[in-house]
Amino acid sequence: MLAQAQSDNSPPRDHGGGIDAAVTQYGGTREDWLDLSTGINPVPYPLPELTGADWADLPDKAAQTALIDAARAFWNVPDDAAILAAPGASALIARIPALAPSARVDIPKPTYNEHAAAFASQGWKISGVNPTARVLVHPNNPTGRLWNLEDLTAPLTVIDESFCDVTPDKTLIANAASNGRIVLKSFGKFWGLAGARLGFAIGDPVLIAKLSDLTGPWAVSGPALRVGAMALGDFAWAERTRARLKDDAGRLDALLTSKGATLAGGTTLFRLYEVDDAATWQHRLAQDHVWSRIFPYSRTYLRLGLPAPDRWDQLEAAL
Figure 1 (cartoon, rainbow, N blue to C red):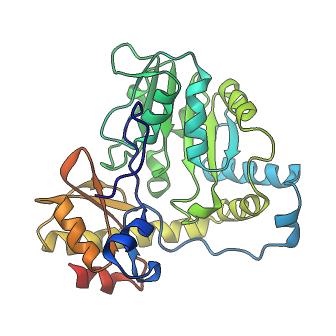
Figure 2 (figure 1 turned 180 degrees about the vertical axis):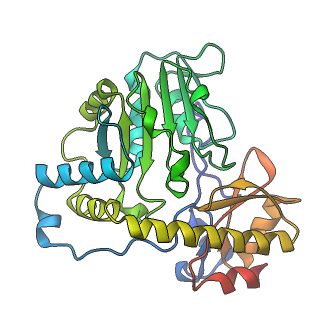
Figure 3 (figure 1 turned 90 degrees about the vertical axis):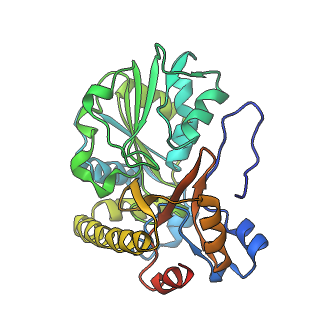
């Protein structure tokens, strides 16, 4: 597995992606590779025509308001919950630990590792014993586990719904306005536009105001404001996309299980499989320029995203 550099004092920070390193190790060009190591929709939202002003001007208040209004409507955000747009959910994850005095934070494993890294970097102890903060990834990455209202137990509770747009009926957004509550939303994954760097924090108005102070003015670019508002307002596209992702996830399950893998969880944006030796599977797929995701804490977990419609043949050949 290709390792990512990290501080000796921080939890491991491994991620999907890393195609450049895979190219160096296995050859080919970036265009040759099918990157299934992430959970990003391979059929992105169609981009509108951007204007020169989108790129040249400081984002204005009207554009910011349009984005927030679209987010409130799309996610059915309670009226008394506040919304903050930011340059990606990762930027919010890095700042959330500063919202409360450092103590103990419960982050049930296995899960997305940036939460633990962010809290540890600001002096928090990762512990489930008498925590004053809790982070729940809902649905969880990589297992797909869903949480309930009964799990929102800490004075500061962060619900990371980066992958919840494929299952909107499971969202916990109705509880977002409660004291100490923050729900995170990622734009890049479901809409397939990770390069736009757009994410949202929704929740307790006091905490969202503090987060806003930490992010500063003009946090979201003009192009991201325009694209985000348009995409969040396109309910029909979202419904069609959920149906396609469900069908493609079923196709991927049938293909992998026919080769000896066992479905272990995931969402319709990524699937988690149990295999005999995940590192060996990754190596064999990489020889045919298909990049997958394995994890340092499991020798049997293999995670795959979905191929684009015109790239299934490459995966089938590699398998």
